Image (cartoon, rainbow over all chains, first blue to last red):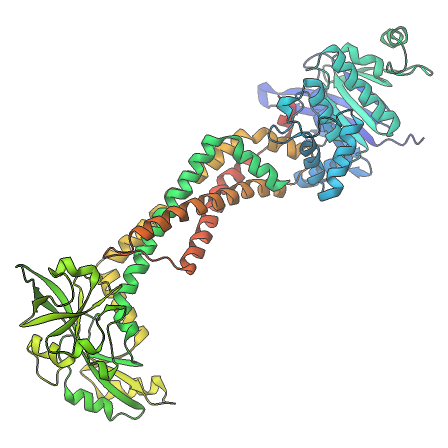
Amino acid sequence: MTTTPVMQADNIVKELGSGAGLVVAVKGVSLELVPGELTLLMGPSGSGKTTLLSILGGIMKPTSGSLRIADTVIDGLSAEDLAKVRREHLGFIFQSYNLFPTLNAIENVRIALDVRGIKGFAATSRSEEVLREVGLGHRLTNYPRNLSGGEQQRVAVARAIASSPSIVLADEPTAALDSENGHAVMALLSRIAKEQHRSVLAVTHDPRTLGYADRVIRIEDGRIVGEERRPEGIDAPEITDLTKRRKLHA
Amino acid sequence: MVFTLALRNLLHDRVRLAVTLIGILFSIVLVAVQLGLYLGSSRMITANIARSNADLIVTTFGAKSFEDGGLLLGDRERHQALATPGVESVVPLVVAFAEWRKPEGGSSRVVLVGADADDQGLLPWGLIQGTVEDIKAPDAIAVDSTYLSELGVNGIGDTAQAAGGRVKIRALTEGIRSFTQSPYAYTTLNRARQLLGADDDKSTFLLVKLAPGANITEVQNDLAKRLDSADVLTKDEFESRSLKQWLFRTGAGLALIGGAILGSLVGTVIVAQTLYSSTKDHIHEFATLRALGSSRGYIYKVILAQAGLSAIMGYVLGMIIALIILYLSRNSSLPLVMTPGLAFWLFALTLFMCAISALSAIVKVTKIDPATVFAR
């Protein structure tokens, strides 16, 4: 298994506002993401984790610092070039799912392929494939309003992985879900990281998600204040028990 | 997916879609009616010129339209024209406004047209009763059936008085409308001269046919030199002069065109407003698309597709209503005209109108910050 980072952030700083209202939301963060790992970025509200996720996703530009996604250093790229990097390397999962209410499950996945130029039969069959992968083979033509929160988030996961991105970024993927669905979604993200050899970074402050992490980065007041790794030999809770999960918490 | 998303966005809010379609429909109907009237008026104004069997038309100097010639051309001009190289025939035509006295009392005005059937210069067309031969009979006259009640007659056999003499309806036409609202009344050349009290050699126009192989420009120039008190025009030039007189000097055409422009503007504003509010409502979805990596062009396509679909739906509905109005106007004195060309241009105008309307929505999405996807 390669450990070459698919994302490398170096001394990222982000200032928001100006003058007396200036806030430094991210203060010199450096991190790397490698394939096959589910990384959690944890911290209290207002710690800068969502701002950092936006920067790592090429959506928000940092005030300073450097960011490499796959082989592309994205510093100074135009909005269209950043969109191209997102198309080619990134998949996104949002807290509120951000599904298109007027499109059914399969269309919600297809549109993510469509913006990447994958159309027609290839897009349909790939969309069906990933929806089956996330356990929604029986809900292909259901609209978001007819899906539960957990099912909607699984559609969002399917949309994120449909184009086989090397990095999946998730913003509070379990925040709007009940315990059962929260665990199901985290298990799914863990499986995506392991089986599909992708790098998954999830921003969360939900302690239920800890047991699924290979690595936990803690952020407070815009700075990384700690990093933990899952001890060797302990699997994610989908294949292990609660005792082992508690060990990781400790 | 672009069209699927655009269509679903449109159908998502049925009330807004209805408002959009009513806006386009209103606009299309208004423009179709105005341009249909313009086209109908143009055809009425030029119909007699277009139907005349001539390559060149000699008019009195400065004649502004078919109805404005006077009776100033005589044998001198006719013979000069006949003597011009390249001229095969010269047919005199009399056209003049005349008072029409109704048999039951009262009067109105007609445009008396005098031409001999044997000359084949200008014959009434669209005959539904009687023949061209019937018009040769003494006192005979042909009028359009649309104007029977206006002329105070019921049909064939009825008599009235035109200018200074008695006339009898011997033929009826259908479809010969008059822009001036004074119906055309067709009779023979000499009968027209008698009714108008004109000399035997006088005419309003000379219809010139060229000999085979003659160069029309050369003959026109040659005739113009010889007939210094007259104008020598091609049919197109005379049609254009007549249109200018009736549609633009009177302001009627400007009013029709102004109405069409106003209709387009109202439609554009309504569609722009609804497209903008639709885009605003779906702004979070467009931001999600941006976050997923879509180019701006992809989102523009969705908005333009929404505009295009609105245009197609609005156009179809608008044309249905316009065609119904067209059908209802067919027997009126000012029927609307719809041609395939006008229908095509109306469609192009609808598309253009909707594309322009999409601009405000496009400006809105250009400013989308994809980072807002994390803010919800």
